[in-house]
Image (cartoon, helix red, strand yellow):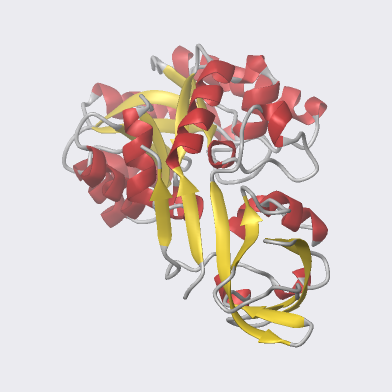
Length: 343
């Protein structure tokens, strides 16, 4: 037997509905980077489309092109890591919306065959790429010139925020609003503004604008040190399940280890679910882990390691070693079977 990641697509759909209700009238852009946070890109975007999600944040051109292949021409797919002129051409060819945060990429998109849709990115203080405020007037003036020439279409202005404090985020929002006005003064008419991701999108209505980029919450991954799932109205959609491989006296060995989702530093800090209740994880190896045994333990018994039904969520585990839930979720091996139910 092997470990598997079980994914409840109905729970995922419930989370999408909760997000839709929370951020309305803004639209939800479902972020599907890193194989949909390890949940499997095709199954996730297909169910999201069936639940009326129409915007997808795909991070890179390869992922965006895969979403296009799965969903067809009507989906709107936003990518924001476009590193080369070749990738810019591929993005335009795949009819992707392109996040443009530097002058060179703007020229690459303009040079591509076709009229690429772009979202111009202002750096509001996070410094995760984006055009610096002092360079923004010249940048939007050039974008307006290229738009008049028919080389591209500016459909949006966007940015990332640090979500470090309300005061810093307020300052970022002020800068963002000024950048939108400067773009309009340059002759552009962007119809889409997006600034917030999961946390600000849920907590601060004034940050929602036209689109809200939400990934982790859609998969039921709450923020480390933040509000719980019940407060957010979401629930984990996946469960990492393993099986007993050996019974060794007072311990049992399960067929999941560090390469399949468990950082070794969680040993002694994590409990798993068994038919006789929670049991401590004692050792985490490369492919197997040792767990405190129980009186009826047998080879093949199921053990719920993380997620729905287990004693700990991925964020619970993350908090115990000083990281975030997404990092734990993305450690689950791509080779581990994904088993879907619902929908």
